[in-house]
Length: 371
Image 1 (cartoon, rainbow, N blue to C red):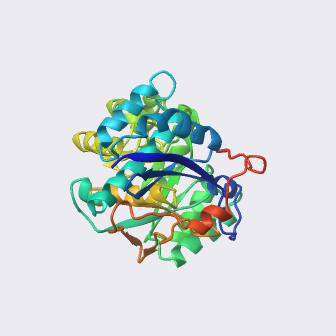
Image 2 (image 1 turned 90 degrees about the vertical axis):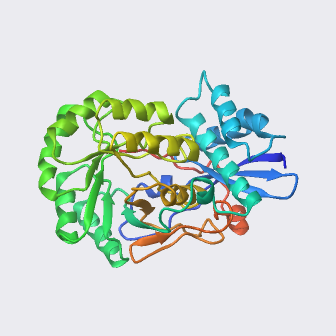
């Protein structure tokens, strides 16, 4: 079996309109799929992180990585990933290029599982859990009143854990009032503050019994500063969504900067890299909770990782659906938990009609900023 085609497919499937609205909706409605085809008729699907420079990531897939993978046996994943990493040495050890590597790597796993007739979790060491608890990952909202609405809606859907993306204390207070004591709350601030600001605001947040405070420090790679925040607060610290490769997480953990590591399978380098990070985290007694605000192969790959890795307490799940399901068989949750796909590969083939209906067009795309 040889790879005969490598293609990046940029999409713009909007989020379903909901109340309350969010300025984040435009960015979250971007996707990049990676399609690998083989000479014996198999197709593998992966996903790259897409919210930023979408077409640039696609270009890395097709110009820099496709020549490495074409004509090769897709089941030789470790060797192909090593070659991709080495090819990007000068300009691609994190950021857009590593997002491209991630998408190709996920597609290789999907192909390998399909070729062997087993779900990817069987290739990763077998099943530790067939169902995983989910938490609702909310968008960011303009007012505390909108946060109250969003939290109420998540509770109605059956979520027992909810992550906010606010940066003001009032919104967190209102969210806790709505959620009561029975639901867990997390807070992801997306790196807005200096160390001193993070400590000052963090102390005001301690009374809300947050499960974790995520990425409170700018820049996110200031591990020494994040360690100071962790030492000063009673709230557990989570970080790593914006990092890449095992070595970035080694530095994060070595600085004692976090209680929870959050590698993103579409940013960090793929499944192999997350499994290495999982071993590193386990050795340091740090909890692994992957970032996974995705709807396609990225979410499916995260589920296979969680299913095959002991001790992962949650799966992040988008709180808002796409206007049209990306997958032919969408991943859904029920009763606060999600079932891991047991079809060969990732079990995340896209709906062909959706690929045709929602192409990404750079001329009409709106930029996405974390503010």
